[in-house]
Each structure stands twice: as C-alpha cells, then as structure tokens.
Image (cartoon, rainbow, N blue to C red):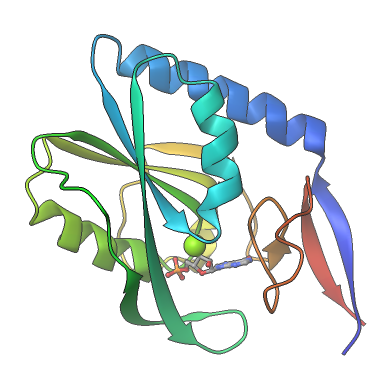
Length: 174
Ligand code: IMP
Ligand code: MG
C-alpha cells in the first residue's frame, strides 16, 4: 500500500519546543545530576536533541523494549530486548520516549524501573496521544499533544521507515 507523509510539526517547530523542554528540565533539576534513559529506537533522535539543551550534568543509558501487536497498535505484551548498562539506584532518572499512546509500554517499564530503587523517576515524551490511553501513565514533560493519528519522523517509524525525517508528519494511506 502506498503512503504519503503530511507535515504536522515542522523541523523548526519541533526544535523550538525541544529547546523549551530542555530549559524547563534544567530549571526543575537545578543543583542535581540527571540520568536520562532513552527508550530505543524511537526516543533516540529526541533524546540527543533534548540533551543538548539540558544544562545540569547528564548521564545517559539506553533500553529497548518491544510491544508486540499489529501494525500501528501495541498489544500490551512487552519484552525487554536490551536492558540498561548501569544501575539506576539512588539516581534522578528521566525516561525519554518518542510517544505515549495506550500507555501500556510505559506502564510496564515504569513498574520495572521503580523496583530498581531510583531516587526519582519521571517521564518525558515528545508526543502524547491522550485519546489512545487505556492504562494510566503520569507524563511529566510533553512536547506536543496530538490527535489519535499515526505519526512518523523524529525517531518514529512506520514499518521501520521514516525515523530520520527531521519533522513530524502524519501517515496518509492512499
Ligand atoms: P503504547 O504502549 O500504546 O503507549 O505505545 C507506545 C509505542 O507504540 C511507542 O513507543 C511507539 O513505538 C509506538 N507508537 C504508538 N503510536 C505511534 C505512532 O503514531 N507512530 C509511530 N509509533 C507509534
Ligand atoms: Mg517507543
């Protein structure tokens, strides 16, 4: 099936918003060190940009989880593909995600990370689709709230494609 991508947030809009988020996070964590956990693969582009705008000392780690499901919806069955390299015990941890939709992936991940004894645990997502929510998740920092449409770019994929788009677009199926 052919698809087209329609710009939802331009590169300029995304960059401006990420800068604001970085400033907000820097002010909230003033005097502390921040441990960023990037949820692969989608969160990687966002984390790299965001981290440049954070002025408190930052360390980073990566985790890869997969939610099995159909094409565009997660099933709630989450599997760890790659675990963290370092302990998060007693650290101020900020999880970086590309998008929260049903909330299932993050809900699972947060329960798991809480058991490892971080000093604090918060969530930052580039995009939030509140209409898709089926499980409660507390989102501490949101880039943009979007309607229940499938989006790509800035790390987000459709069949593994389009992650490298420097903007966020909706996928229109012909
Ligand atoms: P959740 O478990 O339903 O919240 O789904 C979260 C995961 O589903 C995200 O981390 C994405 O990998 C994927 N996802 C949800 N909505 C979209 C979308 O619009 N575009 C691309 N991936 C999406
Ligand atoms: Mg993701």
